[in-house]
Image (cartoon, rainbow, N blue to C red; front, top):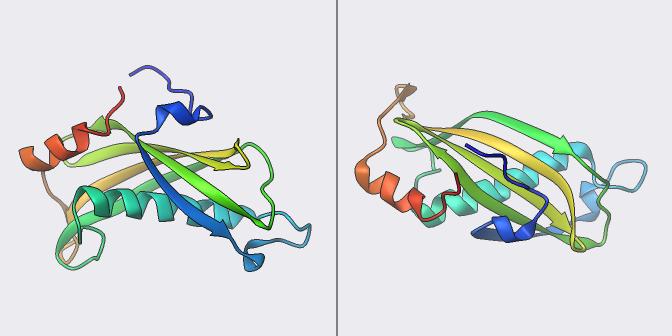
Length: 143
């Protein structure tokens, strides 16, 4: 898999928009670092729900997050909006790799790498991805 420039908006096939709330700020009046993970979650959940509605509800079988890495590139400020770009980078037997760029005012302020597992959420065991699910995910794949 080649490295993808996550600061380039052209590399994302899926987009989610969020507002920056006053409550998202830290004492220095920038967006608190913990909110970067929340914005990533908003984009990730919107993406997964578009691919397979109901798959993030935690009711039986669906997606769970196994790993989240956030790369902090710049500050983000209130008021404003966040555009979260999402792309699938890897499709495995029971997991996928999803990468994201977080943008505000046309500038990428963070990138995120997510590992998501298809699982039986009641028994906390991974399950193989169906061929149908893999096909849906391929529409968003950039290797």
